[in-house]
Structures are given as C-alpha cells and as structure tokens.
Image (spheres, rainbow, N blue to C red):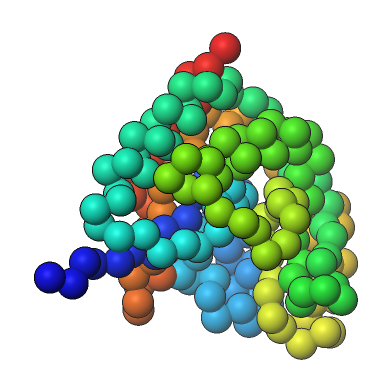
Length: 175
C-alpha cells in the first residue's frame, strides 16, 4: 500500500484587516501566488509528511503551544533578501526572539528539519518578480505598521490548485 503524502507548513497567521491588506498589495504587484498563500510569518517552511506522521505532528505542535506564552508582534517597514533571494517583506521589529524560539521548538521532534536559509521572521509581500516591481513594493511598504498579540500558530496544508489552507490552530498557553 502506498502511503499518502501531504505538504505542510507551520506559521503565524496575520490577523485581519492586515492580512487582507497585505494580500491585496501582494496581488497588486503581480505576485501570482498571492491568492494561494495566507498572509503569515513562517515557522516551518513547506515539508512533505506522510499521513501516518500527521497524528505525531499534531501532538507535537500542541505540546509546543503549551510551552510558549502569547507575545506581541510588531511589523514595521520593509526589507529585502536581495541579492540572495528576490523577496521583499514586511519586517518583524518586536517579537523576533519569541518567533525564533517558537520556530526552533516547532522544528524539533517529528518536525526536525535543516533549513536552506537561516531563520528570519518576516511577512513576504513580493516574491520572484521583476526588480522594478520589487523596488516598488519595498518603497510602498517602507512606512507600513501593524501590531497584534500572537495567541496561536497554525498547521497549514498545500493542495494543488487551491494553495495553502489552515488545518488547525495551536494556542500559545505557556507562562
């Protein structure tokens, strides 16, 4: 019997109205993936897992949530990964260390993974677009601001043709 594989990711969802605003901006730059990717801060990039692994993954993520307290996330301004990667993003200014600790904990146990790039919490707003469009996104979001409390993180699954969708939220319940 062939085991079913799923592509999953773990992320902090950006709340409304900021999520819709940033997604609309991403679309306006011509990023074709904007409609398939919820606005988020990645904790675990896309990874393939088997159906038999999902219960252990879910249990692990629940346990991770119990070890971390809610925290403030402040997004302010824009930055880029160029020339390494053609990405413009909104910068995480407050909550960086909390995101780092949470991401490290997520990427342990059944989700132990090596990263291609060092972890850097951010919200992508333009990806793999012409340089002048990346410049435009960078300039237009230079004064962007959003502040909210992170009370949970989510498990997302990718489906061909539909993109990414939230499968489950895990509360941050630590002290």
